[in-house]
Image (cartoon, rainbow, N blue to C red; front, side, top):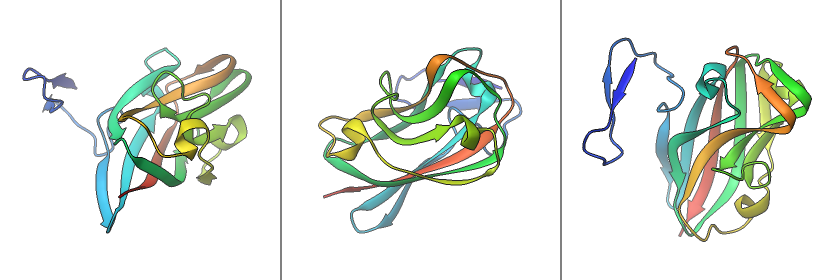
Length: 157
């Protein structure tokens, strides 16, 4: 599938076959109730494209406080390295600033998992925060296998 963003506005045109839960540009923001919002992110092993991280199109606005995060692994990932983890959090520093961190055991088994926000995600965010999915640990690797859905619930007053 080909993506095009010619206007530079963060809006993508999609050409060719598109799956319902397409990783890097899938998901979006859902208003829930009052000042509560949710971000839904779909992650596939192939989204890493041979690397250890990728940015999503999602962001959490400045002044927000992450309240909860959940992940549902629907297809097991295959992680390598020493004590690898999969973190969903701030682009460039998701190893310490995350909404949810999955251990190797959790990422490699289907199921639902609760997250505990850490670092800047455990306090009111000072700036708009681009959400990334990053591997952490010693020389972490991931194959194309694996699929999950992550929901981050936050408040902004």
